[in-house]
Structure formats: C-alpha cells, structure tokens
Length: 102
Image 1: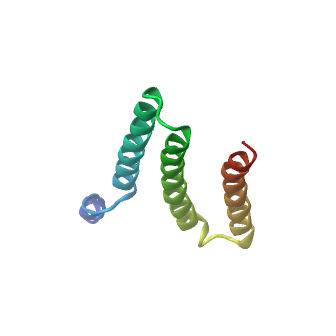
Image 2: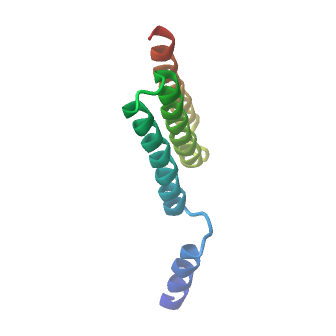
Image 3: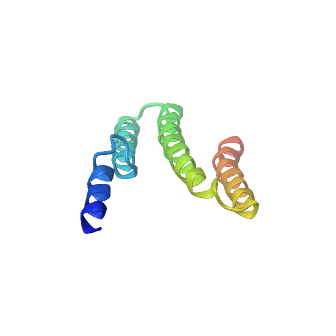
C-alpha cells in the first residue's frame, strides 16, 4: 500500500502544467508587465500606455485565477457556482468602473 501511494505522488510531480508551475509562470509574466509599466511611468511615458500594461497584467491574473476557481467550483452545488459568478462579476466591475469614471 505504501508503494502505491509513493507512485501516485511521484506521478503527480511529473505533471507538465501543474498548479504550482502555472502560478509561477503567471507571476513571472505579470512581473515583466508591471516592471515595463513601472519603467515607462518613471520615464514619463503616456499614462494610457502604462495603464494598458497594468490592465493586461491584471487580466492575466484574473483569467488564471478564474479558471482555477472554476475547477474548484464545478463539481459543487449550484450555490457555489452562483457565488463564483457573482464574485467574478464584481471583480470585473471593480476593474471596469474606475476606468470609465476616471
């Protein structure tokens, strides 16, 4: 029995795109976008360009987290799915509304 559990844990480590790997590369990609936005902002480049880069970085994080959250919610009861959709809509509104108002 112990041999079987060690095989399952080692096979899960060989996964090509596991949660840890996705999280790491997402942070790397978002860091690059935020660093570019920071440098452009410090150089006095148009605020719109900086905002677009930051928006892209934020969108990448939201998409990745939304996909992972849906994987968690999908097998659950309907109330969890409704909560997921409500939260996602509020997050999207929290990003779009300030851009429209500001």
